Image (cartoon, rainbow, N blue to C red; front, side, top):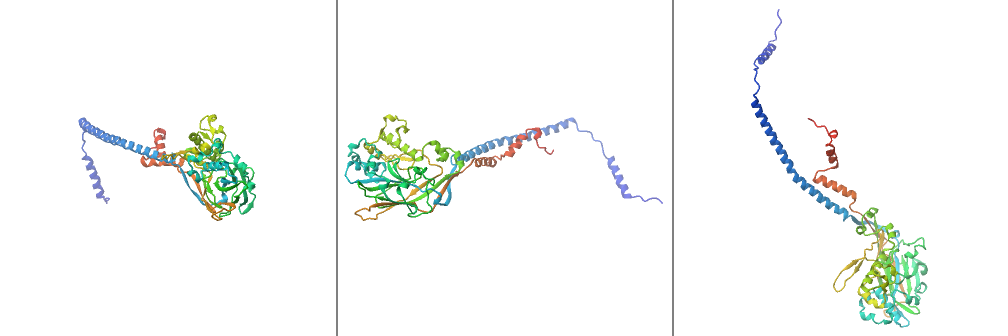
Length: 470
């Protein structure tokens, strides 16, 4: 018996053999035909390369525009760092008054009536009105300064007159109270010549070496919580008519303003403001931060009040050709020959009063408003970066009748509130912020990053190129 034959498999094999037999040999294409195809392929590649070059060159103007935009925006960002970098903001609103020093208080006898009528007393009152710029000074005319020809060469800041009146602590004060506690007035007040003339000063720099607790401070606010003094109005040889009161920093000699009064009670509520600065602010120029740090003040050799006084004194020299005698003549710094600069006398008071020079003010600005021409001069005397401003709003009371004054003048200086605002200056835009700004601008407009630039640099070296899939 013969084995069965799988017919479908045989048919498949026969079909394959038939297909192999039908394969016919075809000759290769002629060389001419191959060259035509090569030329066409070459022309296609040239067209493609030209299109790629055109797209590449078309991007150049866009890249230039993006580069210029990046530079422009970077310059604008740089201005925030180089010109608008300091920001002063409120650091605290609940700072207690016990954390700061109580202000220094300067009391000046400005106007008096002599028991014996003399031109000495009138000349003294005139001098005090001009030097301290009392309200009466604005009403003075040139004729008021021609009545004292015998005092033409009188030094306006020499205090022989006041010394003859025996304006000493024991006779001047009748009662002193500090923080609700009675005190000996001569223990807390010092008398002598200040920058502008004779005065009594409390909590001043003169006590920095005498008392370890200086500068003194208080722990409360309100009337009679700070300094309260009573001044004798009637003395054996004179009667005090007007007093001037200045509140200022203990380390300075001048204040924000001066308050005048002839009433029986002078109340001076003080509103302090504290200013501090971060150490980073020191990196910027002085003309931009406009304040000195503590180690820079020692190099100056003078306080801010002394700087302002010298500036205003030189202003008097230029306007009136004379100088006040509070400082030595060799300290004059306006470039003029000191041997030719004379001391101001009574005859120069009209010129000083004409220019309205407020020598008691801590302001940097000198107003030169004359004949409807309004101009100012900046002394450039900056405060310490860590300092306190004492602003006062004075009011007065008359305790006696309208026909006569009381025998005493009471002065009450205190903090109006128990808390105060503390401000802090800081860098608004630091160097780190500037670097981040540059990086963000470059990435936003040009798509540049540090990592991308680094990789692009490494791709120029064969050993550092990244492998690419073929």
